[in-house]
Image (tube, rainbow, N blue to C red; front, side, top):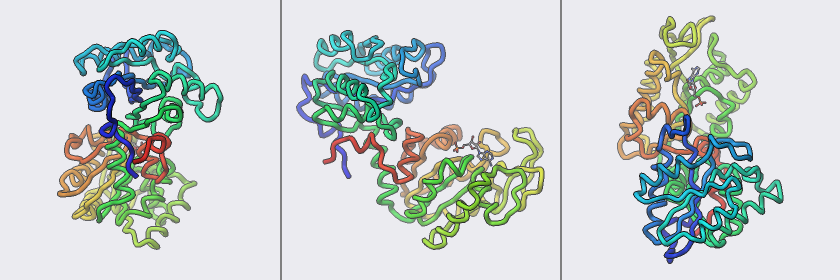
Length: 403
Ligand code: AMP
């Protein structure tokens, strides 16, 4: 299903456009530690400026719990944006977000000018859309800033939440489009799950089975091969009756793991689990470690072993769509990073394949290992990308107009 995009918004000259961005940047003592999210928002903002719109940006930052918290002001973001766009981004320093200060600034905006609202979560209503009448009022106030006309959502990171500034506001605006970042996420994640070029291989790792239950279940309906590594693999190995020593185990998920092994068989999906492991005595880099097939008591599996690396690499050969979520081991420790690095390299080297890294720690791993540039798409939304892979409809995506 195609969503209306910035490209399809016409006759914007002189019109106010409200844009929901993801400016949830890491801050320390008022200094932005990483501007990636700001840089990611620039294509949409610049396109709207070029079309002569009056651009009103909004975002949440951290968790101020519904009241003004000076440390979570978006003021530093306005400064950074001004530098990147090459023109002043006015900052509406209004603790009520949508009050008179903001309204006056929006009214005075000239064509091609840009302003930024204060942290949308300074208002408790922001996260209560659909649960509280006051939240509907807040959504209306936000929409009124752009004269109830045009809203653009470019915040994929919050797309799995129905809040006032990404979903509520769409009920009061005439046109609701997605920005370039959102469009890219929908195109890559959506296509991979709904319409993959085959063979389709998914790689899941990370610490917990319970975080990814929905993802495993949904992907087994879609993929040709499912590779499971990382800490979560040990619950599956336990389900198969293997010795796992002190490795991570979610005892209450062993039955679920068995069900998934059975489901893979029924569906004809190749399910691959580690056949050897790098085990360590203690959870630290400088611990005694060795490579084994069966894990002895008192030891824990912290990475996949060399035979498993070869098995996983082989399974990736010829893949045309790959989705990867979660590291193959404790990649933060050099001695247990090899599995993640080798599997990452194998994905990065695939020819003519769409390779997608979705969410959280796998994104960190790929960046840390210097493989980010070699992937087709790195998802910006941790929770949102996981919910996409679970096959859930994201409220933030649903709310945009369909074309
Ligand atoms: P997640 O957020 O679920 O993707 O989990 C990522 C975390 O899982 C990383 O911090 C890894 O260090 C950790 N992890 C991966 N494999 C293992 C393992 N075998 N034992 C313990 N932790 C692991």
